[in-house]
Image (cartoon, rainbow, N blue to C red):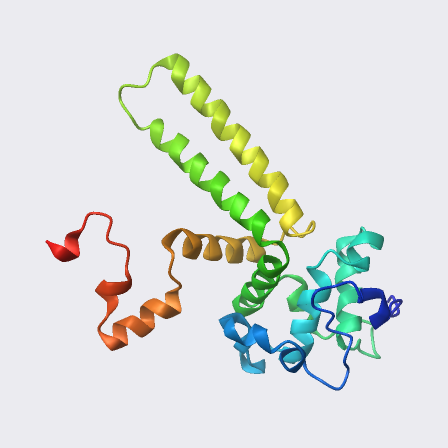
Length: 225
């Protein structure tokens, strides 16, 4: 098992240097993160210490010295875990099973936290991904039209393949090489929210208040009909 090779000073150029103040938790050091639901996690939700998990998230999914010097994904995850304060078992020299689960971006609150950190670090890239996704969807809808000729079908398919390829490359940059399916699920969860313009927890709250119609998109003006 690798030993910790880095110090807080190695991350001094990071927007969120979660190792800078050992006397404070991540949320104490960066209270602005409290506005994001993903940071309100509890141990019962994720199976590990929430503060250590937040530190791991920023260490693993930021373009920092770990990303620049450790190309092997699993080694990078282990080094991030050690820096975050997770400890290996004396017997077997492995992390406990609940810690190893986070290497696979599980359970779901964990993957959503990771995606939130990714968006905080690289939001313009995420917005670009959303544009590609929407453009691809428009091209796919064209294939369902009955008035599309054979030549046009060929061009549309090329466009779809091009967008799909661009999205794959962009996704690799977003995730810094992590191809976990759970992380991808979390990305599309955020993508749906981005396109809808409203988060699921806001819908639930509006249902309780009886104000759902006021906050949901109404493209056909049905609420005023």
